[in-house]
Amino acid sequence: MVKIEDYAPIVGDGAIETIKKMAEIIRGEKAVHVNATSYGGGVAEILNRTVPLARALGIDVSWQTLKGDTDFFTVTKKMHNALQGDQDVSIPSEEFGMYLKVNDENASVLDLDADVVVIHDPQPLPLIRHRKRGKWAWRCHIDTSTPNNAVWSMLEPMVRMYDLTIFSMERYIPKGLPVPAIIDYPTIDPLAPKNASMKPEEITRVLERYGVDPDRPLIGQVARFDPWKNPMGAIDVFRKVRSAVPGVQLAMIGAFAKDDPEGAEWHERVVKYVGMDKDIFVLSNLDGVGDLEVNAFQRAFSVALQLSKREGFGLTVTEALWKGVPVVATRAGGIPLQVIDGTTGFLTDGIDDAAGKTVLLLRRPWLARELGEGGKDHVRLNFLITNGLSNYLRMHIELVGKMG
Ligand code: UDP
Image 1: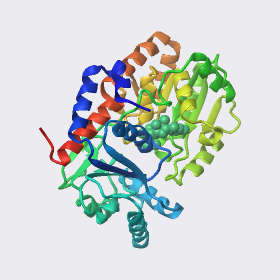
Image 2 (image 1 turned 120 degrees about the vertical axis):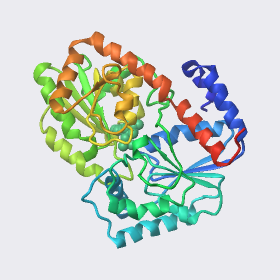
Image 3 (image 1 turned 180 degrees about the horizontal axis):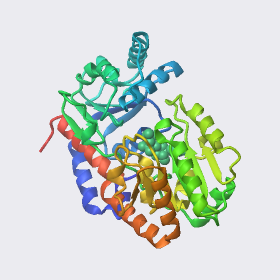
Image 4 (image 1 turned 90 degrees about the horizontal axis):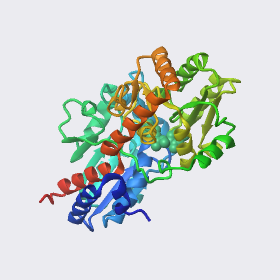
């Protein structure tokens, strides 16, 4: 079982002591996290690791997920897209009514009786209407800097019912929101199978299993099959890179999240766009690509790409940096906090620029190594689960008023 002490060799004894002291203050308190899916996407990834660690510290935390059908998740994905800035989305009142009703049904089976309840993203937002007690926080993982105002105004009255809101960046906080807001950066777990160190022969075995040549350079993008992740952009970059560096290969790794009905359609589009290109590998959890395989691929990348058009934060960027892999990425959302241009990777302005910078890194392994080391240090200081857990404990302590 996971223990906080296991992280001491990575983050130092001081950080572990602070976490233990904070946990002591709220030992025995009950907390609940609710999100839309137990698999796929960054939120499930974070909760999957943080909740057991908090439990190991003596906090009675549970993680519960919503039940909904495809119609429900189609509406909530539309909301997600609208909050990320898609101005063409509209939610008719019968769809909004169904969204509320599914949440009402879930409220009758979920255990929401806790000292602190944290609701993640828009899907379970309406559960606040069923609060019986406790402090409630809404953790929004989406880039809400330019929301579709029509959709936001449908959701905002419910957001106002919360005691606290949490966003990944300052500029995501909606203007005029009369609820306190704090910033929390998403974090990764260095000891999770997704990120733990691997033996070179294990990495080679994974590559060979999928027909990737371990002796030729590999670049790749790990992301859900989703328009905002810009998979076609990553493929365009690769094709330009290959004309300068023959022999290079591309892995497009994407999972199908349970709450993302657009995944299948976008997977199909990507496969079509790739055509018969034998140097591009489109793989997903349906091909058996789980945490260990994602870990192996990320470690095998000479350069990780993240061509996202919108990105709340982008755990995949942090994951690559932690593995000492330089990242070539767009300036979307939180990425500029992760990719420090020229220090942990390169920020790019378009396909040609991204291709040029990728070629540069492929031709100069010493530079790639330098940026990769910079990335690892940057993640160690800022984006590990111990930072996330500290922030979470502090929030809990403040919400229940147990400060000093
Ligand atoms: N992921 C995965 N397999 C895939 C694609 C993604 O396990 O094929 C994981 C990825 O490693 C990361 C998470 O899903 O931990 C995606 O989180 P991120 O914040 O990058 O994006 P989101 O999907 O939440 O928009």
